[in-house]
Amino acid sequence: MELINNATKKLFQVRNLSNVQALNSFSQEMVEKLFSIKHGENTLIKVQEKDNLLQLVIYATEFRIHNRTITLVSIKNIQQELEEKEMESWQKLIRVLTHEIMNSITPISSLSSTVTLIIKDLMENLRAQGVGTDEVDTLEEVETALKTIHKRTDGLLHFVNTYRNLTKIPNPNFSIFRVRQLFSNINHLFEEEIKSKNIRCDIRIEPESMELSADEHLIEQVIINLVKNAIHAVTGREDACIRLNAYMNSRGRIVMQVVDNGPGILPNVLDRVFIPFFTTKPQGSGIGLSLSRQILRLHGGTINAYSEPEKETKFTLTF
View (cartoon, rainbow, N blue to C red):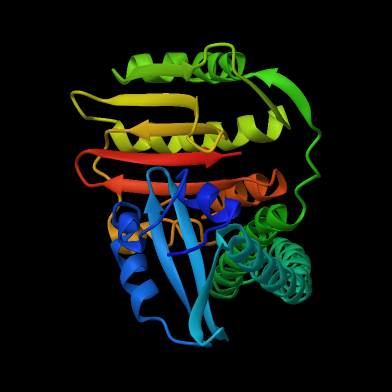
């Protein structure tokens, strides 16, 4: 390797680099690709770097200078761009779905309610006239069916309105606040619940005086959702523990984490936890984590998940 620019040094967090193989500790797959990549070829490499997920696009081109063939390789982390495109796609889909469902369900809900009232009046008239019970029983069955239809349509309307939240998050109202105060507020909010379930909650902040510029209410909403998930995961375990961490990473960025020692998340599930509508809970809505990713995106940050079954699950917010 003859030349390396400052952006690449920053990406790999090295002061200098003279040999490509020195990057094996960063990603062996990437090193192999750097040796094999051909002129005009580009490829995408996924690298798990401590608490950060990097999606690296590698592109190579060749040119000749003084009878020497030079290979120029460009490397760019497009993780944030991929997340933004994914969220934009989901938002467009949700807008279309909610519009179509609302147009179809609203009149059904209204008509079922109206017909139920008509059936009630008809049954009262039949009883007043002393008409046989068979006719009344039949109408009661129809009334029950209509009530079921009305209940399900109301449930669908609630479902649609819930998912509208994904496309209607307010722009962040930035302010500077202490991370210690944020964590303390959240700990106080769940204090009674975690005590009653024998869950230990540890808070670690380095440095203790750390401050963050963000929308405090939106970030608090994200952390609360993650803590709720963590409580659900560790409930019933003898050594149940939840950790709230905050620190500056090696790239100088503020990082917050919610860590639990629950049963963990399987790899095939972990890849889908941020997808809208996806949930592993019987009563889950599948909106919490996708909403959290959208909030972090509006802050120019990222949220990633890591899980080692039967050891720990870690959600990392990087600002």
